[in-house]
Image (cartoon, rainbow, N blue to C red; front, side):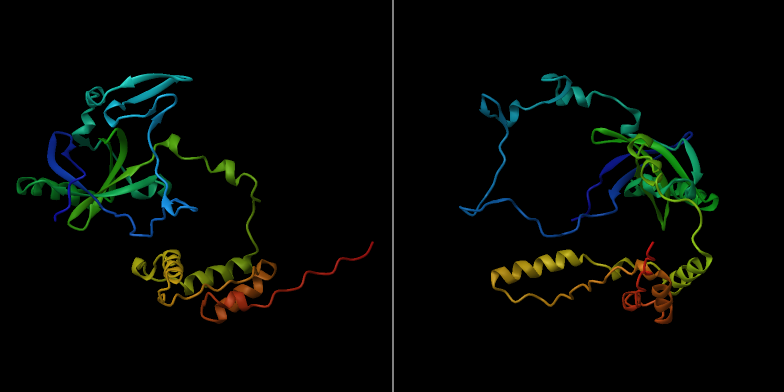
Length: 278
């Protein structure tokens, strides 16, 4: 079954409008879903929508509301919400272009694949895609989807393009409030050289296929064991002690082992110097 478009509308650059469709570029992991169970009966706990003093309510009697004061709401119907018109509901207009490196990764939220809606749109779509690639720029604009207007970026991706929703400035916590107490100044040069050497030794092209959810595997093994089913073997993680006391020895041992991640754990830790008596 072909994927269903998440959004369909116009991609606009000045006077050029191109019909396009968005498709989600990611999918949720098929992990294990755990339910809440009533232990004495073994039955699943369910949540019912109720009103205090009235009991359970019918779905048709539920509307959305905004709390203006404690216990006082402005009610909004689906039709009223639908009438809130924004041009960005049907049009994504590129209003600015920036270098990709200018956008801090913390602002990126969710990616979508952008494709032309029909063959007539393919030529103009390809022109904008290749122009972004040649200029090494990212397009910015706003797009309304499912009850929210998003700030979005647009960049080339193979034969198509990728649109990514971005967080607004007020949605990102300022780093200073978390990092203010960290000491200033550079670490010892020798330690920095050892660390950069180790990073270089362990550098390789990014391959997401090398990584998987080990917690999910361990959880499946636990469930199989409790069911009396022989679980598939799961490699137990190695618990390594902290070796911050002797960072120099740990880094040197790691480099000697060719950047092996287990080497640091085997590095002998220096005993803290004995305190002199007064």
